[in-house]
Image: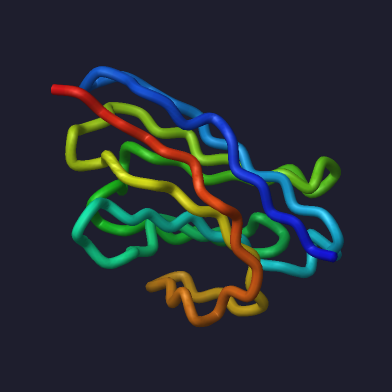
Length: 125
């Protein structure tokens, strides 16, 4: 049984930082691309960042480029998202997902098979 669990969300002031983590079990972690998605109240879920199975390629949405860094530790079956210079518009539920496709230019949530329950990030102004 595949389990994907996010952690590290919380309340932070604008300009602050948070580091999200995601652990996945029940799958061969280094065979999967991993992605971070977010959904703000009243908005559609959007792709934030994704990383290739071996970490050799990454994608970032324009809204987070230069502020967020995705990484993975395949030995620990763990995915990370370092979020710096946070803005109130980054407030959302953040989801981690595992999928079998990767593209350096965009991310499509339909590629992702396994999803976590999400971790809330709230940025106050």
